[in-house]
Image (cartoon, rainbow, N blue to C red; front, side):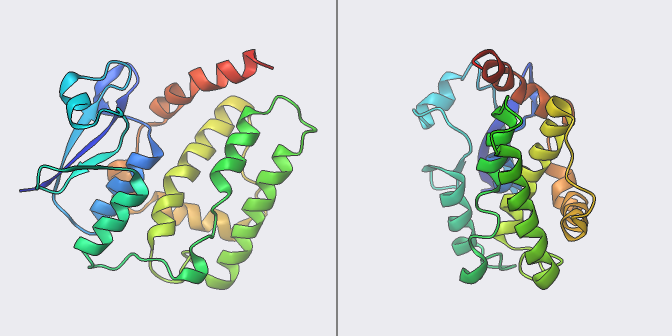
Length: 218
């Protein structure tokens, strides 16, 4: 029996893959490990009863490995996938496990910000520079020549970062971060990434209500 995974459907398009970076991370892991899976799209604005019955918290992603038990939390899911399907190995060496760990929170902080002097842009730039420095010494991926779990975690987050900051703030990653830019080109052109990414317009639509609420609360 193939693995079943419930993921977010696109806002206003319930039959199209949505923009959840945590769902995307799990899909990337399934693809990189060449595990057969069946995708179930869930409209999070109108959660169907069958979904709430298997997952009362109503969160995605959730996965069923064929034993009837549904498992939630993308970190837990990817860890189980690594244990159940060890080839190819995607485990990150302990010394690199925290690389880029503050990226998403720094990105959100800058996206939410309405004050150009609050330090949120500088905090994000520091995270990007730190990753660029790491890639200079250890690239082209976080762990040298082959992708690992950290790469599959960062790829969707960078995809959201690039699209939303460009669309909502007219901001792009600095040109001088050469190693980081090469890294993103590598990630975004992986076969697994191209197959599992949400369309740009669905990423924007997914973030738009949050951005509007943040701006109105300023």
